[in-house]
Amino acid sequence: MIRNIEFPSCKNCKHFTPSINRDFVSEFGKCNKFGNKDIISDKITYDYVDSCGKDTYKCGEEGKYFEKEKNINLKMIKHAIISKLPYLIFAIIILSPTYIKTIIG
Image: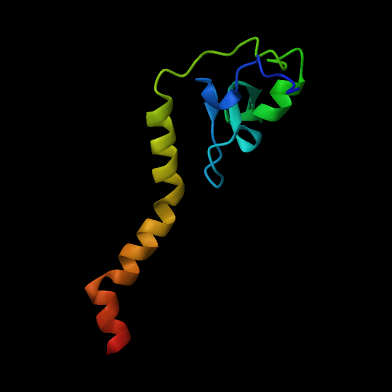
């Protein structure tokens, strides 16, 4: 029997932000609904979704504050592009004609 099958997945919530360095999975993502604001710098540090899912005062396992992401496919494509951007830039530099000329001489 699968536990929590009836509850929504964090990755399908509009408050979910995936980790740039990871796949589009909820365990390393952040929740834009919960976090702390530094009163001096105004910087907001968001909580990890796995901790929000375990905390009954936040979303809890049942996903109290879950709001379905309407554009999940677009969000996943955007994440895929952003997470691969350093590799794309590196490939462009390596394959550029000026770089090849400097190597060859």
